[in-house]
Length: 71
Figure 1 (tube, rainbow, N blue to C red):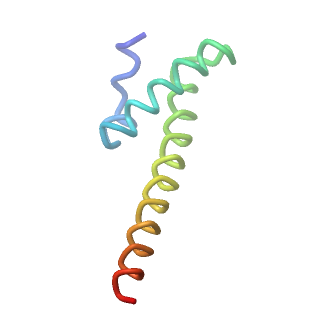
Figure 2: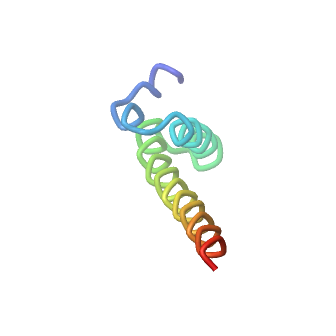
């Protein structure tokens, strides 16, 4: 299974997002009976969405803290 996880889609992700994608893909293979390629493709999209939400939340928190410092 790990040899299938060395797809190019995973190589462009950050280490944290890649780890999240692999965990999601493993779960999808187990629960949804998807092929490894389908599971990875779906997991990469889910992990990217998670990363964007996570970054946006962190940026928002920093902006709020800068705003409080300015006041």
